Image 1 (cartoon, helix red, strand yellow):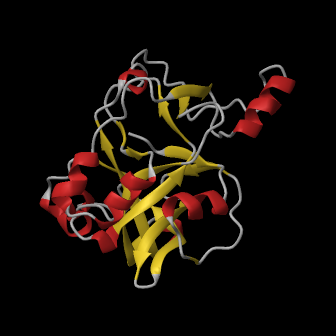
Image 2: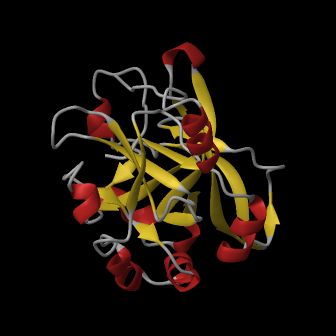
Image 3: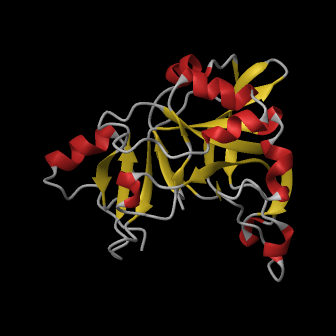
Length: 237
């Protein structure tokens, strides 16, 4: 399960690849760390074209999972797309979204060390997108200390892990869209068409670009090198 990713690209790159026509956000900072229940940028369909917006990560949980709880931390990853609960969001392009990212992390569960490994297309960390869904203005208690909040929520799909992710975390990997054509299909196609995108990237498509830290970005590689490997090292444990 991917509950931590980064997005260190820029608004211009997102606009170009995702064909964004409007934005409800200002200048995007470097998102070295986007964690579960945090806020991140997404690209969504609107009546005026695709919009870049900030939303909260974690779709509403199925009601049966909330019995006995006084909060809903949300569902960040969606693997079982055949479940009726998700159908209303998956089948309607109005509720699909693109989630921009430059790297994502998984703990090393194969060895049992749980050391965080960051995956990207290359050390330069080019912009890619997760295939996501979103829902507007959902009122719930995400954190007890905050009480009820009303948020636009999102999550992204997962699938079988490819070779490089599976060597570290063999349960699953995010569904990743790498081309403008794939992004367009996800945002406009019928469910019978777009469900074919729920597949792992070909083996060899990703590289481990960093380990053992909670944040990621190419600028952190340089800092880490200058500090002899001690900078930005951290653990989620």
